Length: 588
Image 1 (cartoon, one colour):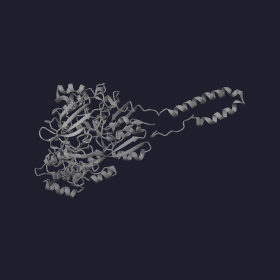
Image 2 (cartoon, rainbow, N blue to C red):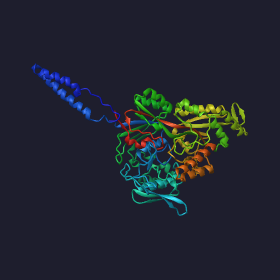
Image 3 (cartoon, one colour):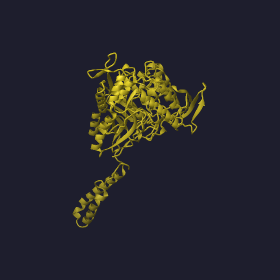
Image 4 (cartoon, rainbow, N blue to C red):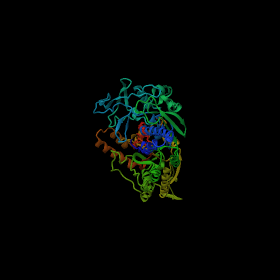
């Protein structure tokens, strides 16, 4: 058995042989020892029987796995908000239609077969307005919600209805609005018509909503749906899950308990129960792991890289530490409504003033590569031609002078109107590395005359403020991406969240550039990979010039896995390892 070593157990036949030989010699010589010999025979047979059981029975099965992560989701509805913490849990209780696996290959999860142009399940068509679109045939796997109700095409129709509604408050409505029509063939088959030809037409990362539960709530008042959804008001309702697990208990800020979903039609999970503990402080997270209060810390949202590096040196006998290079973009959003940032030379100066190479080397042993923009060098669409910013405080001072921040009082720059260049950076509390990075940036910006105040908020509060663009100046966090994904939701002008669009969209800086919009549109429509790569080069070039976001580095996710835990496979993309949680098992 993989990962398991067998050893002789006390009382095995091998150990018993000398006793049997001695007994045989004694029987004929002393009848007074017969009773004792008989007792020895009984013990011998019992010992042999127990030894046989030890050899043929499987190792003790661990029914419950206790894991931990650092954040509490703000909502459990899969369409509302975009917190990684929520995805890690929802990936255990449901499945998107498609996902990228650990080899970054697009595969079907809730669908039966991946539709492609080659197999005829996807086609280009002429639309009534004279433009080109696509038809995509999809068949669902045989799935059932936890209350026994089948998962059907009607759930798909309802999910798109919610996603397209202007008041529903979904994280990003763009993908839903592209669907012109859903033609239901039967309970498991439907044809989707979309309004354009795109290279990622079959990347259907849609997680379905149960129409039999959520539709009456939505229909009653779409504007209040995000506050009334059963995912938050009745979170343990079994009808909300169709994955291998379902939520049976939520203690806010403390733990989420999941149990095996009896209606799951896929591979049976090895654990009957998974308890997810919320431990927002990364130092406390490590202490809980070492004390045995936690079996495993989720690699996507757990120990920081510097912790894992030190942990690996001390505990490699009990843990396997995997450093997974990931499409995780650590960055600082710049709120462009703030007039201090109106001149892009200011944003360029700020990036020049931050020594990202030193941060990577001192905190991460150089394992986290510096980011020059939103596209990772690991991504097949990466272009090395965009402008790069090294550490150059002299050049930063020059740009700030040119932008009008020439007056310096008490070490802090002021503009021509006398406004002090004093700003705030908001980030997530409890993450020791982020707090350290913020402190380094604070010190380095001070050297060029910019005063930076640090505000750390609980992740849920931080996420809610980000969604409504309530940060006053800077926000430091990370995006998790998919291979080859166009960063439309974070850079397109119509993706700026506002009260008018019910805070839908992820363009939190408020960036609007027609040239960028054009490049994003063109990249999505290019079926040829080489043409698309050239358009991605334009996206990276424009981004590097405008800097609506200050890139920091691409993360390496450390997975600190106890040696008995098997089946955890890091992916490095937005499709987390928990999408395959049914393959996790414990082998003593």
